[in-house]
Length: 102
Image (cartoon, rainbow, N blue to C red; front, side, top):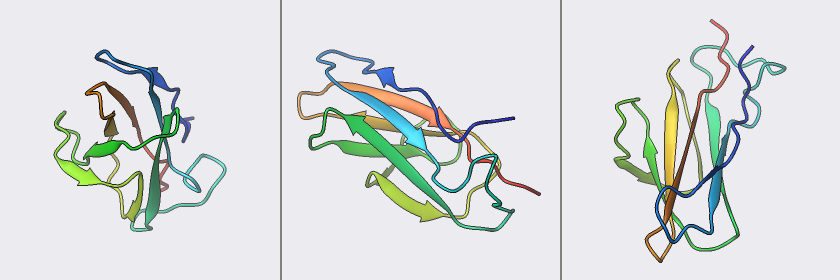
């Protein structure tokens, strides 16, 4: 069964002191989220700092939606991605999908 937590990855380009984790609080296998229910998207970067969060919200491989680290929307049954960039230009990505019951 899919998980709602995905392992952090190191930044894809130096300088890379950061990792990012993508989770969907309240939308895991133990939760009851159904098609049409809003889901929270949460990206966590470490170490703490000022980061830019770009999201791939249509599974096309492009990070074209600039949002904060967390937001809520009604998801589709697809893989989502987030790219986090630090001030030095280093970046990290994570991807995952919330568990939705149909």
